[in-house]
Every structure is written in structure tokens, then in C-alpha cells.
Length: 256
Length: 283
Ligand SMILES: Nc1ncnc2c1ncn2[C@@H]1O[C@H](COP(=O)(O)OP(=O)(O)OP(=O)(O)O)[C@@H](O)[C@H]1O
Ligand SMILES: [Mg+2]
Image (cartoon, rainbow over all chains, first blue to last red; front, side, top):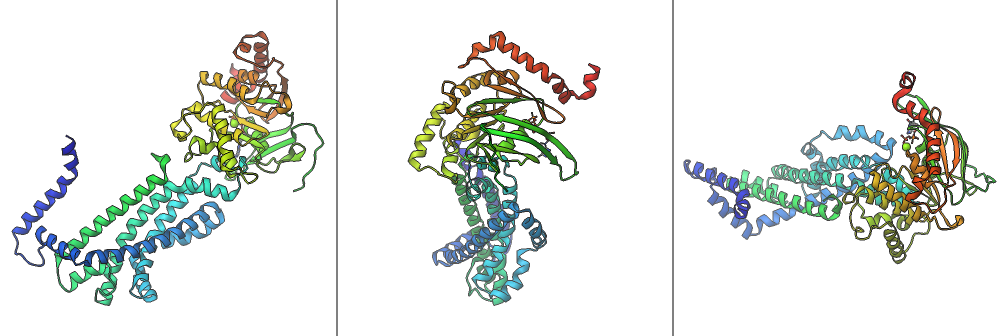
């Protein structure tokens, strides 16, 4: 019983694999019909030569840079907007009109401003992560029971200490929701940004996993390679989300 | 903001307090408290009773410094009150415990984070241990508020206010959410912690709001009875029952007489507040 439950999550992926293999075997073999076998061997060579880990580290670095700067800005601005009604009212239209613009739509600007390297990608990523964190921070601060800061005031506690010990922990669960959403968006937009940058520069010179995919697509026409990249991106996304959840558990012990 | 020294012996003194609320949406004004004057002595246990909506919480909030009166002055030890302060601790009806802090962290919140004279870790530890012991929360120090029963939350909120060592304790229906048995137990416990046996100048000054007339009579040195529309103090009734008080007091005729007298005074208002004026005429 316990054993079968442990294997339960693997049933669907396994079935898909079998279906894939069966489907492919009816077709002509070639670079456009990747088989599970060819994907595994491509994956092995990409990993053992260090190409895939290197590209992944580069992309991750960009995501982290963009995400951290976005988080710092979004939390700060979100706090100000939630605490001060006048700041909130003034910034709200600006934020709401930028929000529907897809991160990738900023790519032309980013490339013209920052070139085709890390800073352009980090800019796109930061933009993508910014809004979910901002909106959830505002929501988090506004949802704090007003009797809590009031109680702190009656204990003779001043505003800076109230912000640190009442408002911040009170908003933290929502900030985490925003961070998880933001990180997911950041990770998906890095691929798009790097793909597009790859298309512009026409080579894999500047590294990341998206550019690697572009090279497989435009030059070596290797679908197995692209699939390896896709799987790697998915696995990393999963690991990141689980990591963030673990941090959340550490920081929000009262939520369990 | 001028600080007027008001010459009075009272610990807390309210002079001609009026509070008018204006609802921003409709512009409608509500006269919550009208021309209330009240002196509270050092070490006195004052209970305020009155029908729902007569302005009890408003008065307490103004003494706490969380709400500004529309007119009139409130002073403590002769100094006008301009905002909340450590010397006036509050126990809120909904407890307002910090959900992300354990019992211990909640209780040490004031001594740790207050602006004036925060305590060192060691001094805090000793103090908090003392209050945890006092409200019998030993063994639950590391629980979060949502892991406590209603009565334990109440005691934690009480200890949090006490641990900050205020001179005055303001309590807004602190036992309202509890079941009848727990309430009776906590009433006696409150008197013990307040220091019934201590001389007056060593006791804390308490303002305690309640709906329960028998609760007020059991606890108080004096009961202020309020009436509705507008919120005013109708009568101040000294409670001369001997201290220390215990369960037995409730059975005495003196106790019953006091409860009945206060009930007769507010029953009309209470009916009006709950079933409306039409209901009274029909009855
Ligand atoms: N923030 C506010 N804005 C507008 N009106 C208010 C506000 N707070 C209280 N009031 C009004 O003031 C009056 C007195 O309210 P208050 O809360 O002081 O009553 P109370 O005696 O504590 O009632 P209860 O026993 O039900 O707690 C009520 O009519 C209420 O509607
Ligand atoms: Mg009230």
C-alpha cells in the first residue's frame, strides 16, 4: 500500500513515455522525430560536456539578479503604497497601466538600452517578477488586522518597531505568495528573452538556456536537444518552487 | 498642542468629553459620547456598564489615546493625554494577539520593543516568566495564539498588558467571548492578580467595560452606568462589598440588591438598544 502510493506520481509520466515511444516508432527516424532514447543520450552528452549545467547557471544567475532587484523594489513600493493613501492613489494608475504589458514586449527597449547580455535579460525578468510581488505586498499590508498595530501602540512601541515587528510579519504570507508567482514568471520569461536575444545575435555567444534552445532550433535542428532543455527548465522550476516553500515554512512557522 | 496641567487628585480625569463620529461616505454624524465627566482614583477598579452602542468602547479608546475626543480634556496624573502610552495598558475584546508570535514573544513584546526603557534579554526573561506563571500559562509558552483555547488567549492578552507594567489597565469586555464557567474563574483570578490584598496606592487603576451587571458588581469599587442617545453617564454607584471577594459574595442579599438596582436603571435603555423603540411601546 505504502509502496504503491509512492509510485503513484510516476504512473502518468511513465505512460506518456510509452505513448511517445510507440508513436515515434511509426514514423521515419530523424532529427525531427526525437525518441526517448535520443533525448536521454542527448541529455547525457549535454550534461557530461558541462554545456547544459553552464547554460543553466547563467540563466539562473540572470533570474536571481532580476528577481532580487524586483523583489526589493516591489516590497518597498508596495509598503509605501499600502501605508500612505496619497502615495497609493498616485502610483496606482501608473502601476495598473504598465501591468498588462507582457515582459517580452519590453525586449526591443531592453536590447536597445542594455545590449544582448545579462543586463537585458535581468531587466525583462525583473519586470516580470515585479508586479505579482507588488500587488501581493499591498494586499498583505492592507489585510493586517488594524487592531494589531493599535495594540502595539498601546504598549508604547514606536512606528519603526511596529513596521518591523507587526506590519512586515503580518504581510509576509502574502509577500511569499507574490514571490512564488513572481519567480515562476521570471523563470518563464528568461527563456523567452534568451530565445529572442539568441535570434538577434544569431549565436549562443551570451550563454543561457534559451539561447541554447535557439541554437538547437536554428542551426543543428536538433529536437532532442530542445526537449532536453525543456525538461531541464521544468525540473529547475520545480526545484526553485520547492526551495521557496521550504524557506516559507522556516519563516512562517505559525502558519502550519 | 498645549499641555494644560489640570489640578486634580484623580489618577485619570475626563472633563466634559464629547465624541462625534463623522462617517466619510455619507457625511452622517453620530454623537457617540456627550458631555461625560469622570474621575478615576489611583488603585480604583471602575466598571462601566451600559446598553450596546452607548459609547463605552469609545470612552476606553479615548483614555487609551487611540481616539481623540471632539471636545473636552482627558488627563492622567494631571497631564493631558495626547496618544497611546506605555503607562496605559489595554486588553482588547478580541485580544489582538500577534499571530506570528508565541505566547512568550507576545508577552515580551512591550518590554522588548517599546521606545522608552526597553529591557535586556535577561531581565525580560525573568519578567516574562513571572507573568506566565501568574496567568498559569506555564507549558504553553511556545504555542502560537491559534493553538490556545479562548480562555488561554485571554490570559495571554492580559499578561501581555501586565508585563509592560502599566499604571492603568484598560479592559474592553475582556471576558465577553468566554463561556460562563471560564468567565467566573477568570473574574476571581483577575481580582487576585490586580492585588485585592494590596493597599490602594500599590494597586493598578483599572477601567473595565462589561455587559454583565453581576460581573461589574463582583469586580468593581464603583460602577458607572451609561445610557444611550446620547452616550452619557447616568449614575455612578459605589460598590461597598468587602474585599477580598470570592464566589460567596454573589449569594449575599447586598450583592443581589446592587445588581437589581443597576438593572432597573438600564433596562429601558437596554430594551431600546436591542428591539427598538416600537417594541417597548407595544410591550
Ligand atoms: N469609527 C466609528 N465611526 C463612526 N461611528 C462609530 C465609530 N465607532 C463607534 N461609532 C458609533 O459610536 C457609538 C458608540 O460606539 P461604541 O463602540 O463606543 O459603543 P459600545 O458602548 O462600546 O457598544 P458595545 O457594547 O456594543 O460594544 C455607536 O453608535 C457607533 O455606531
Ligand atoms: Mg464596545
